[in-house]
Length: 242
Image (cartoon, rainbow, N blue to C red; front, side, top):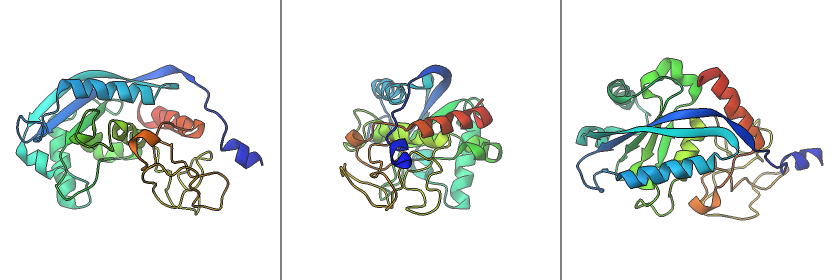
């Protein structure tokens, strides 16, 4: 009973004690929307969604500047760093364009390849010392509010920023072991899609956390972090992002 109660324990709102500078790097192949030239209005809307998503966590964000990078090369080659070539491309790109240090968030709006259904990726904060130039969020430009991806309208940046603060996916390790390492996120066997209310894929207490920002459920389904996740983010900030 105590474990089940802990999993529905409400989040206590925290006063703002961390404000992070944010730079948007808009990587575009050309000056059309299809080429990645995201309008300022969508960036402003994304900042609003981001701060609303973190309301009550003690974490907020301040938009410092938008840098526009007209480069078909980087628009078409920046991608998930699963090979040494891609890691080197990201490293070179970051050396040229990344702003600030470990406490400065760079949101890189990129295209990904046409056959890739990835919406974003982010290195965990513990990797900053080794991969500082790569540090930041890499997000598909169509996923911003008002963009052409109807199932992603701003929550991708919230999800990826959770990784930037050290959070793992809610379905990490499935039903086994420590899961995502946070006690109050119920175990989940695999990513959710859509908004499957009352989904329960693991025998442990609690329904699948389909409303959590760190799941893969649909845009309108994800709306919260748990108290344990918020504590974990603050711990990561004190170690890696201060």
